Length: 109
Image (cartoon, rainbow, N blue to C red; front, side):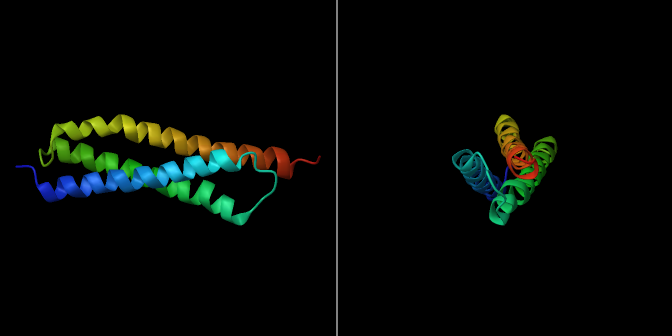
């Protein structure tokens, strides 16, 4: 019925993505406002955040397919609100970074 190996893989994926997403969001909050451009900040706040957002969408799609095909428990649907919260947090981090760069770096002062 429901493979324990698949369930463990999903749980591990949710945990790893959650920790990585939390790191990006908390790093953004602690570094704001971004007064000057730094390449490592751009990579984290844009590159890593976008990759995490894509992985969250792929995980949600996999969970949805798994539930529809009855390969995993329908209880996994309860992860969808966490996926949405993570997506929103990551998108706010990226937009906040871009807003700070646009405001403080690219506009003449």
